[in-house]
Length: 145
Figure 1 (cartoon, rainbow, N blue to C red):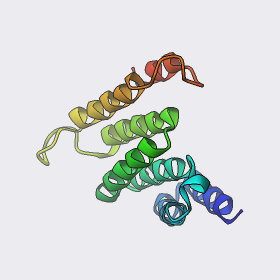
Figure 2 (cartoon, one colour):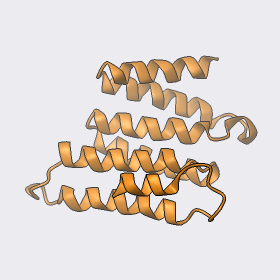
Figure 3 (cartoon, rainbow, N blue to C red):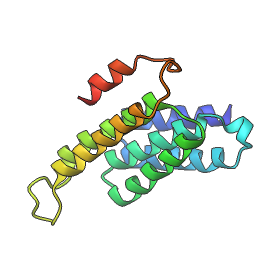
């Protein structure tokens, strides 16, 4: 129940555009969930890690967001949730174009970075075993497109 309360608080703060406090709450929750047994943890860690990564990106804490992004991918490898992970990747692509340097003045090209996130999302969907999806892969592919 405490985990659900923290998740709701984090999401509520995000909805209020309090991105940094929301991300901090979700990171605390991710640390808590990471300590649970593998059986209890299930896909909860994937959910929380992906939401924390997105929250950090919304707060424009890109270094921490990139670390949380990778943590979400590790959690996804243990407890797959392709729609959630591809949503996170699409959000990173969107936020990269909105908030990161896209003209290359800082030595990076945000467009290439955004497209790389979308390519990773396509790769997640391509790696799914056929016939075992419980969601519409075609829809997720369309969202990526």
